[in-house]
Amino acid sequence: MQRRNTSQRKIIYDILKSTDVHPTADWIYEKVRKYIPNISLGTVYRNLKVLKEEGYILEISDGKQSRFDARTDDHLHFKCDLCNNVYDIEPSDINLQLDTSSLEKKGFKVCRYDIEFYGICRKCNKEREVEKDN
Ligand SMILES: [Zn+2]
Ligand SMILES: [Zn+2]
Image (cartoon, rainbow, N blue to C red; front, side):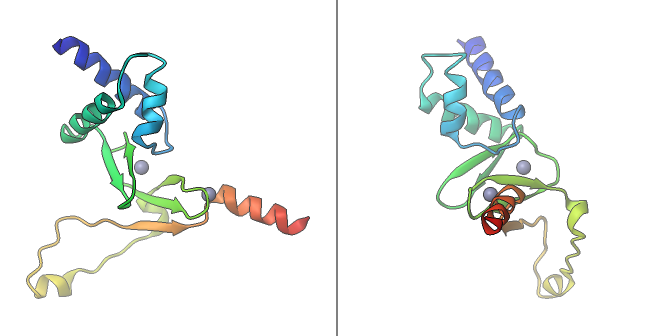
């Protein structure tokens, strides 16, 4: 029993690890079914929860939908308003400098922060330009 759970979890983790689209649980479920045809969506959710608790994956929620990310190092996300895809942003690409000293003065000890970018992704931008040219 224990071993079966572990291998299910490994398959789910490997699927998530192999993509950078930051998929939803439904997306992962569709892929997992190719390997474990009788798996349920609930089992996929449960395994994602355990992977998250163990620190292997991140859950990104926009309030409506949860997406999952096997990349857990320091990085940020860009969400496209048109196609809803989520892209990884390298902290070194945005030259982000936050000054939290006045917060500290007000008694807030900042331990981490969360910044998300929203806009139009490269792919959608290109498609809009193509439409303009026609
Ligand atoms: Zn897009
Ligand atoms: Zn990411």
